[in-house]
View: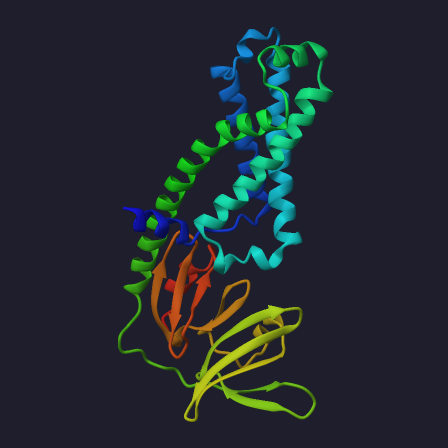
Length: 294
């Protein structure tokens, strides 16, 4: 049981990176907190009169601080918020930090920015001081957040596993490899690589205007990092229809697909010759199934 619980923390989980998802999560979190406080009125606050607008402030704080954290943290610490390395455990640590920052703002709001009537009521309940605010904030947030994470991970995992199984049905064991065209890739002024598109495995964006190109020919597997953008590469008229962009950071050769695998983070594709899996974006898998080259 203990090992399974530890393994759960290590399971893949998606990083929230779209503005739409950030707003939905933040608004939902603030609404849940406000509803909980209004319905249950914990920590003795039901003894304070006229608390509706006072409690609304906590809901707004939860919304605002959550949104700011989700927007800023991945940009301040990009190396810590890599999509392909994000796990449930890391997500729980990020949530703990968000709850801590919410507690700090709640402390300032609850003791310095509201009517003295509310402050006096909290003093009578012995609910003042930063430690009290941290305790109250975590008490309200930890259990529902952990439960939500568990059910979200289960739902996403089942969905992506089912998608991967569906895509695997379209992978033929005896693939017909279409003949490719020779393309030239330049790495500096004096270095050029002539690659047949049928030998290309994938291209991975490395940031800026650079990308790593993987291909396999009679002499073995090759990887070269060159000055190249994915958008610019796809403009090459010599590319076959089996060369597609499956993710914002990857271009793959559909003829090299071996299998698909799903987890809570994404559906991943395993490619011939590579020792790592390539993620598929949410909008890509359906298009892949329509390709007759797999």
